[in-house]
Length: 112
Length: 117
Image (cartoon, rainbow over all chains, first blue to last red; front, side, top):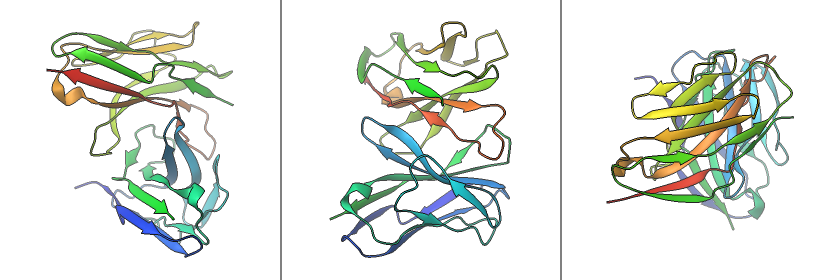
C-alpha cells in the first residue's frame, strides 16, 4: 500500500530535550516536505527536499532541522524544543512537479 | 507571495442539504492549481478536489463541485446531499505551477463543517 508513515503519532516532551519525528514514504517520491498546523493559521511549510541531500527552508524553518540521506526518509529534528513548537506536524511527499501530495497521519507534539 | 483566505471559521448544515464553503486567494501568477482538502477527526489530510487555473470548466467529484472565478480570485466548494461523514475541517490550498524546486501548498486557515442529523 502506498503511504507516508510518520512516527510517533503523539509526543509530549520537555523544553530543550532533542527529538526527532520520522517520516518515511514507499512511493519513490523525489519531493518531501514538512508542515505544521496551528489553530487559526492553517498549515505552513517548515522545510522541503527535492531529492537526496537537497533540502531548503520553507516559510517557518526556525528551530527545526531536516536531513535527506535516503530517498524514502525525511526526518524532522527539533534540537531544543520550545513550547511555541507545540503543534500538529505533517509530512507530505509527491513526485517532483506533480500536484498530488500524499500526507502522513500527523504527529501531535506537545512541548511543556 | 500567495495568500489564501477562508473567512468563515465554522459552518453547519442539515444532513442531505447543500452547503457552500468560501475561499478567496491572492496571487500574481497566471497558472496555478487550487485544492480543497478535508481533515476529519482522524487528522488525515484527504484531497477532495483539484482545479487547474487554465481550465475554465469547474471541477466536480461526485457530490463535491467548485465554483472557480479566476478574475475574482474566488474558489468555493459546494457539497451536495451532505452526509454525516462530511463533518470535518476543510482547507482551501494553492500551488504555483512554475514551482521551481518547491511544490509548496499554501493553505487557508480552514473551516470547520458540522453536518447535523
